[in-house]
Length: 247
Image (cartoon, rainbow, N blue to C red; front, side, top):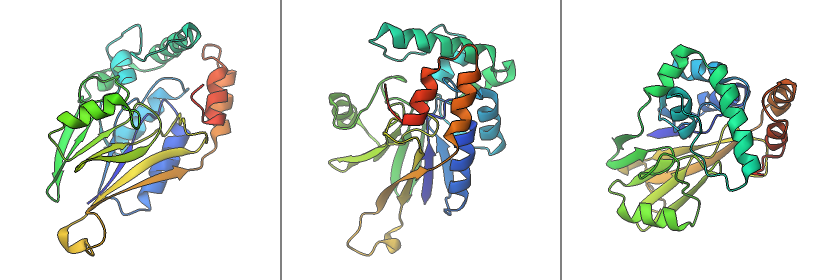
């Protein structure tokens, strides 16, 4: 069972289109999105419509919750007041430019989903099992705490915009990274494929769960220039798209 997991698209339909085209070539059985469809970029409606058209199972992210439920803040942690101000502009633009129908779609997204594939139980969330906006960064105390309490075999999240996979004993934590606003130091979109193998597919030397982190090049200048031409969104968002950096 091969599951592609995408996350944190952030209104970047150009990156999303390339990632979905890449997934199409990889013989995947299921695609799941772990949320944050909107925010930061210029194309919230197009992203939502693309996921709806492709019937992709989608989990609610903190930005989706905020826009869908007409909240004032997105729920992210911004120690720097300047970052909080920029996020406020992002919320303002996204709220104005997301249709009522699509806000309803965001509002009704599930906050988590759990499946069993080949005897492995896998749980999908946006931030963590505790909070929609909790960061499970690699090797963090928060990740240790969450994984120590996890009932399922695999936890899949997003929110940090940095993909990774790490075992905690026999439990596996997978972060799906970010399609539309990566923080890996590269502008390329990224996502993961989780391959949960049947017993007869294992050669005796490999695990029955394999995780592949995939980078997908796309025309990031297109979204960056749209941000710069926009009268509300900060130009700094375009710099982050081009650099693939967190700050």
